[in-house]
Length: 394
Ligand SMILES: Cc1cc2nc3c(=O)[nH]c(=O)nc-3n(C[C@H](O)[C@H](O)[C@H](O)COP(=O)(O)OP(=O)(O)OC[C@H]3O[C@@H](n4cnc5c(N)ncnc54)[C@H](O)[C@@H]3O)c2cc1C
Image (cartoon, rainbow, N blue to C red; front, side):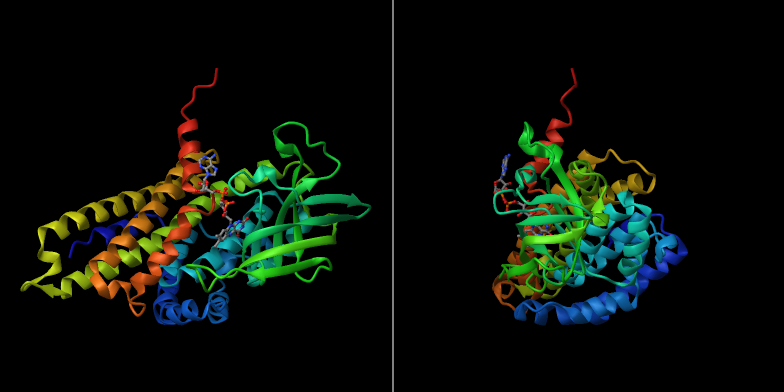
């Protein structure tokens, strides 16, 4: 069989140390995470075994700088690990990736005291959550109404968040709300948006419920409530009103990350489909020998290869310190997630009736793929962001 995907995997310029770690992650994904995925999905149970195994390898440390107890590696190495874990179990992949999504703003914008206090915990394996979405503020997060009121050395939080990955299990929640002393003015009060770190167990912070979902059933998705929740002012990230800028910068790192996660699902579905149609025979021939099926395979493989090459292109930009990568990150997130959905759907089709039965993982991959088109900005939004980037400024 063609080595084209092996060559693509060799594309990111990882150091020998990073390649070694990626090999360990592959082994963990193959030997431990993948075999447990069906059980956790069916039971809709949080995969603590997987989180412990990930922490035994010390994987959170790869995105925490050394001076704060980590052993930071390249962004490309991180994306490669997300893809491997997600191919084995998409739920576990997003749980771990969410640690990165919530920690990155702290790493990039946190004050020295905050980083010394909180990042060693992240490096050691703390779970994190990133809480932006509210019932009436989804695609347009600027409509959020959670309120941060300063009171001496504290900030009092009131409001609620929904659909928060890791929300019920997180040790630290990076929470976005609006600073009460900044006038909302025009533009939905976007200038009041502020970021704050809330620790598990803070009085006034509670978990309202865990959602029952179509896919990613092993990851927890929680509704959170904040009722006169008093948080030390020392946990403010940046200055009051800097939240939106911080959020937009953070999205440029989390969108390629959810794209790598979606590509893990796409890879798994493609691999399963190819293996199956090389075995399954109808009308005296293997399914893969029918030309109509080869045309389908050609289209899927081509788009997957192109998208993976773009993943490494975006990774290289980030590793080179380029920060204005909004359109590139949107293109990657949109295409990777659409592709994950398409390949997972076609994989079920290629399995025929067997694809619809729950003991083949393509069925789970199809359910897991859908949300990738919705979260981190639904793909309609990404089309707008990409299109808008071509408007000449007058
Ligand atoms: C499993 C899961 C995990 C999640 N994890 C997190 C998390 O960890 N943290 C967090 O903060 N959020 C999280 N979310 C929330 C997720 O990011 C939102 O669901 C997403 O942003 C969409 O918002 P919405 O659901 O309110 O949909 P809406 O914004 O109501 O959109 C509904 C539909 O309208 C379309 N639409 C909206 N606006 C426009 C427009 N201007 N033009 C064209 N079409 C438009 C959308 O594309 C979508 O198809 C999660 C959601 C789920 C389901």
